[in-house]
Amino acid sequence: MSITEPGGPEPEVDADNLQQGLFSHLLELRARLLKSVAAVVLVLVALVPFANRLYAELAAPLVARLPQGAHLIATEVTSPFITPLKLAFYTALFICMPVILYQLWAFVSPGLYKHEKRLARPLLIAAMALFYVGCAFAYFLVLPAAFRFLTAVTPEGVEMMTDITHYLDFVMLMFFAFGLCFEVPVAVVVLAAVGVVDLDKLRSARRYAIVGAFAIAALITPPDITSMMMLGIPMCLLYELGIMAVRWLVKPGSLRTDVR
Image 1 (tube, rainbow, N blue to C red):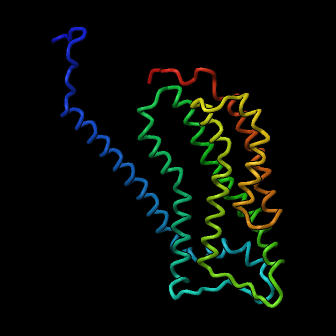
Image 2 (image 1 turned 45 degrees about the vertical axis):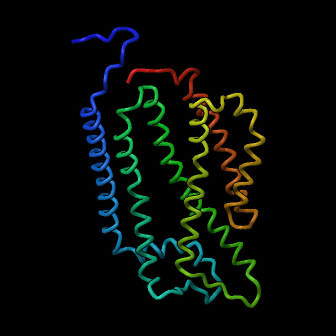
Image 3 (image 1 turned 180 degrees about the vertical axis):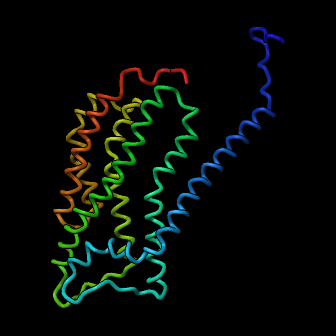
């Protein structure tokens, strides 16, 4: 076995081994993607018979607050079939998200250091849980308040009858927006872990975080003060939760090289 002299030429990288390693990683990625897709398809097939019932549950916050005689309408020929099917797909994706995240974690975790794994595990679990909490918060609290406001300000002589596809798009947008906004603690911990901010900077930036939270709430929520407050206040509380999480999880020098 030859030893490279100091200052001599670098040893050549074995191209065959490098290609085989890359190919094996691609095969593993494909296998995990197929498992994720298979899980979504299986759940979707199970949900398709209940698609109309799922849509009825999704529309309940609006239907319960529509004026007497008003109802949802379908303005396109295929909407009564396609829209509940789209909701079934979104629901299957929502249910299978833990499986998808597990497959992603199983693929990337072998390349992480020990301290990175210790931090990434709780962050992944917290991110998934907070997203679900944000969606539930939007469905049970924000949407009823928003629809109560919107039906109350409908001009006289205008009958409120919303298209089922537009309603689904609106609610999915609200779910996604609230789910992302509830990720504030995770974002704060990640920024602190990579060294962008520290605990003192986070504490001193509270006033800016409050202003930013209410600015985001004003952009995302329907145009009523109740919905804006119902998003702005939780985001401020979640920012404080993120500061507490940084104090507990992120230690000085936690990004130093560690063994895998």
